[in-house]
Amino acid sequence: MSSVDLSVLFVCTGNICRSPTAEGVLRSKLSSLGWADRVHIDSAGVQGWHAGEPPDPRSQDHARKRGYELSGQRARALRPNDFERFDLIVAMDAGHLRELRRRCPAPLQHRLGLLPGEVEIPDPYYGGPDGFEDVLDRIEQGCERLAQQIVARIGP
Image (cartoon, rainbow, N blue to C red; front, side, top):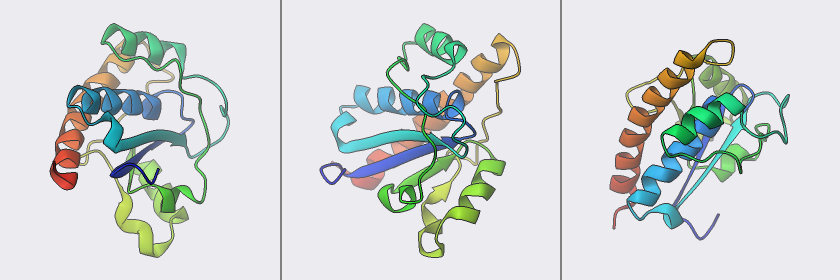
């Protein structure tokens, strides 16, 4: 990751719904701005239950309808060295943020947060299609603001 200007890690529970969606949305937004090569984006779960699996098919289907491709991603668990490797670690909800704060070394706590505007993304896993659409709406809005912040932070 040394060849990029900034690295972002999205974190949810199992890394199959919210965080891979956020990864795909931010990657698309930065790509459309011509910044894809300058920012490394990844996602992980606080749990490793789904490690190696692709995103939930419902997440993929809803994302694809909006032009985001998630099929190449594979779930992984958060690793202790992620706190050092990533400049920004974005939790999908307050519970994930608490868990990240519990695991993160004190000198790196400043890297943790929610999407800009303290946006929390509800878990769509046990709900119907409307939940996945709501997640995409919220992630698109949050990632639009995050993309603007990233561009302002690392400049031309």
